[in-house]
Image (cartoon, rainbow, N blue to C red; front, side, top):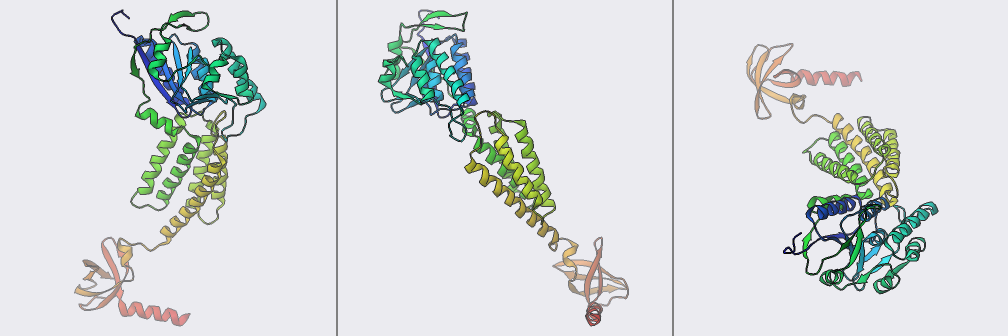
Amino acid sequence: MSAAQSPTVLVTRLDGTITPVVADHVEEGLRIAERDGHEALLIEMDTPGGLLQSTREIVQDVLASDVPVIVYVTPSGARAASAGAYIALSAHVAAMAPGTHIGAGTPVTGQGEEASEKVVNDAVAFAVSIAEQRGRSVDFARDMVRDGKAVPDEEAVRIDAVDLVAPSRDALLNELDGRRVVVGPEGAQRDVVLRTAGAQVVEHELGFFGELRQLLASPELAYLFLSVGTLAVIYELASPGMGFAGVIGVILLVLGFVALSVLPFNVGGLLLLALAAALFVAEVLTPGTGVFAAGGTVALLFAGVLMFRGELGVDPAVLWPTAFVVGGGSVLAGRLAWRARKARPTTGHQTLLGREAVVRRAEGRTGQVLLEGAWWTVRCRDTGLAEGQHVRVVDHDGLELIVEPAESAQDQGTEQEDRS
């Protein structure tokens, strides 16, 4: 960069949960910052935490970065909790706005319960190694994981958890001007002097599709979309109509698979989901027993339990109601399909069976009648037809209706009643 050019800083914002989408976004930001020659990547953060695996990926990228990374916990009232605390510790420069806090890094399961001792010990070692590499407080790194310790901004500076407190972005960049940091992976490190005073800011945003993927990066949403989408498609197949249920079902299935694309999942869970769908279809085709629906419900429950890897999991408050609603819905869809198959047709020649009409034109055993507002050619198998004669439709042959004299049909019905 020539002396005539003013320095630039690439800025991105991390709000909400740390997910694979966020990890990819940070990796892309580091790549852009290095490619375009930015002085630093500034990450403005306010997060309650997130996935430990995604956090590890971000920390590894930051520790090996050839571009200085500045993490700034902002605005006032924001936090770098759990996963955010690990990321802040790994930055070349960690700063906080007044009224913010950092810490509470104890790992939890997908259901919000405290993780096992083995997982906690692993997280302690991870946090301590980050603090040692960046020269930050090892005691704080250990305590924030082991005891869930969290501290406000001023105390974080006092115990060397972060480097400074800055009231604004501009104040932070001016304060950091001239600071020396060490960048690069182990064995290829070098000193860099920050030139950030008056630096131009270049925004690196997640974008619409990134925001959509981040919104969908939820085990509960993925499970809900896939389950309800499957039910909607089955309902459409069982009771064909305008296609509304089918369209909604396909949309939900697509959203569910998009959610899976950004979450670590197990193939076994997807196979169980496919088995559940097959059993629900079997219930629709053979309604009445409920055995297939029960089996599908059990398979759907196990699919939710086994679908995601690591600390991820479907909240039981979503898992159980969804499975039972979809199972019950398959039973209902089966009953609807059965009724549709047993119902009297409402279109075509079958709707004319049993209807009576008056012969308007006759020639031997054939003639014409006006029925349902349309002219029909009719034929009597046994006797000739006469104009004005009342006939009843008993069958059809192509576009021709087969009729019998109405009196004859009535007499046959009377004889059958007498025999009974």
